[in-house]
Image 1 (cartoon, rainbow, N blue to C red):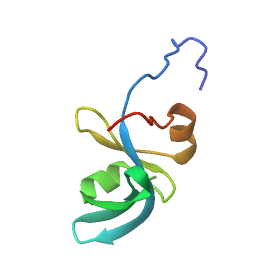
Image 2 (image 1 turned 90 degrees about the vertical axis):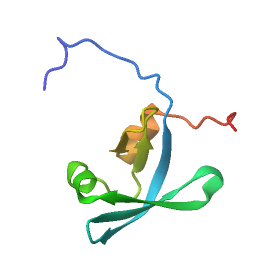
Image 3 (image 1 turned 120 degrees about the horizontal axis):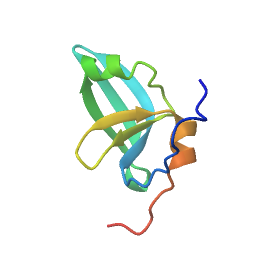
Length: 90
């Protein structure tokens, strides 16, 4: 795709995210294990619709939650190239 005719944008969002450590299929969805704040193990259950929408989700990528609560997936390289850890939050 030739992007030369498109405008460029720089991201400046603040998101909550955790690196995915496991994805386990369950009836009606998936359990996603991820690394939480301070490195603790956490998990969330997502419905099949989320898993279908984010079919490329894999261990090592990031579960991302935006300010409005929208939950998404980002591949490891794309996330780490675009975000840095904010260390001065409570």
